[in-house]
Image (cartoon, rainbow, N blue to C red; front, side, top):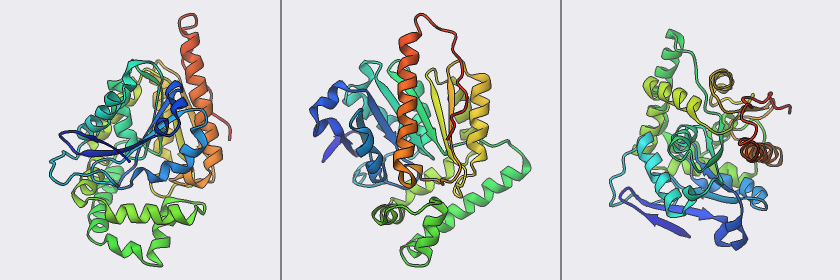
Length: 308
């Protein structure tokens, strides 16, 4: 087990280069977790990708094995970006242009800030199920309702440890059956995460001003971006990711690509690991080629939607 101690926390992380020294010569993929979940759910994907990439996962403050007792971390986008940034700098990932950043759900907001902060090291960005929605009275009402649902779920979350609510909880997260080990991990992480951290993350993830800033910053990512969406996602409406893709494609100067999975939900990395890994690998390879060509060919702006 590896830990990095900072003023925020004692951050738990895993680096495939620790067990495979050849990973030090590979391009790097940093995974940023979604809401109220530890980094354990990335493991099947890491097992597939680590043949070609150095993969790094970590537990954000308030989740998994990261220790916050005795510390006073701020549970904000900036705070979570700072702790991931400390890990990037501790491992020296900012020193060469080899870094791919992948953010899932709420982690897409943190990943976006990391992409802006470490733009010189960044090769590509990937955002999974973290979209934007047109600001209307209807969406405002929906966000208010979601805020109330977050409060309710935090106060009574232990009920999801028992059937049939446990299965109902997972049916909202995954449209396909996932291995029982990870079924249990997702529920366990949610029920055991720090309540203050989980509440704060749930609230800033739907805060209108935070979402406006997120939209601006996604457009400003200077490297190729892949938007991934499961069209059977019952946790976050897939239309939001499609809207983000269209807005970024229309306004950004760097390439924007889309991976659309018609029958997958909120956890594509567990529902169809090999298929999802294939889309990530294609994007990483595209981005690396983009930078190899860029000194000569600086006119590429977008790529067509990926076919699945």
